[in-house]
Amino acid sequence: MEVALIPPPPPMQPQTVYPQPMQFKDIDNLDQAVCKQAMIDYAAESCCLDSNAAKEMTITRNNGLTAYHYILETFTESRKTECKRKPHHGGSVDGSENGSAPSPWDVLCNADKIFHNHTKKMKIPHTEYIRPCNNCIGRGYIQCPECHGNGQKDCSCSKWQRNRESEMLLGSNVNHACPWCKDTGFLKCNKCSSSGRAICTECNGCRNMKTYTELTVKFINHVRDYIFQRSDMPDQLVKNVSGKVVFEQDLDQVFPITTHPIKEINNNSKRIINEHKHAFPYERIKRQRQRLLAVPVTEVHFTWKDTRSRYWIYGMERKVYAPDFPQKCCSCCAIL
Ligand SMILES: [Zn+2]
Ligand SMILES: [Zn+2]
Ligand SMILES: [Zn+2]
Image (tube, rainbow, N blue to C red; front, side, top):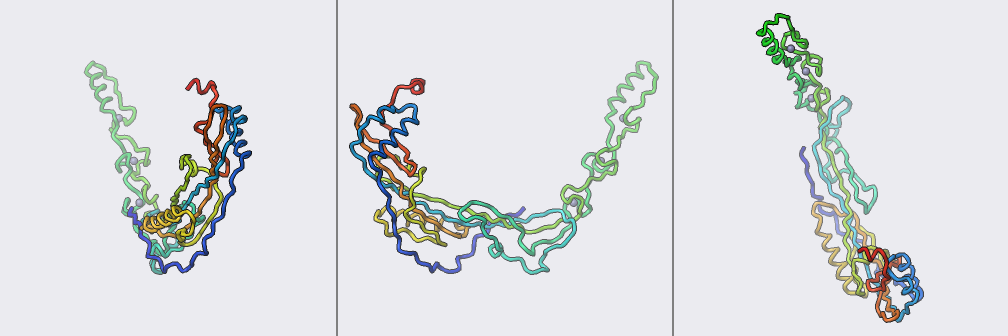
């Protein structure tokens, strides 16, 4: 089957909508009581951390260091055509006599859900035509594969014959006819009831095939992101927690963020939007959405007995990252 991926036509006209001035919300810092409680809860859940240390520690300092998670989604569609065949059982045929077939990009096909990957298939109007089946040359049947069209098969009694001959040599004169073929040497073909024919597997006996062009529309949501994070905690952690949406834009084509007080965010928004602009030559960009999430990260300095160290609370979920927090000796650590 011939499959063709069709590049989209160039965009009709440049976008004329201009964005509202970009405004960014802010998020609150955590106070010390919340920082301590987060650690107590975390230590209680973990079998290896010392819950007493969490209760007894003294927080000496806590810094709110907002991290940012920038996400660009580019929702595109690609279109490919494929020549399909199926048995023609009769009925109407939507061929070129009904009008000329639209080009693949002119076929109306809307996404079921924007910013979600999914695929839709449909028949392109006016592309149907009927042809005699190639497999059976329009007869509807083919040679029986079991008996090769003979309606009968050779009996495997040559061995029987040999045994019989040797018996006769030994002086036995009992007449042993072959019990299967009665010495005719042939057996009826059960597969085709001796007709020698089998229903064509391609057209199912219909003799004709309906050929048409099938359109496959693939909706794809391409996601790229960027993390801006100043604490000593690994950046990757910020990706997997939720934050507060401080800026959101949903347009046919989004505009790069240019007025955020943090220059790196502006630069990376511009870089990622630019990358997506040229990344999908065989896809049409349908919609874009960009979001900037402020993810609260609090660096907490604490003392406990002789220990003086830090831990971090991050995300709206208030997850804790505490690689240096006092451990207690427990059985699971001892086994490790
Ligand atoms: Zn047969
Ligand atoms: Zn036989
Ligand atoms: Zn056929």
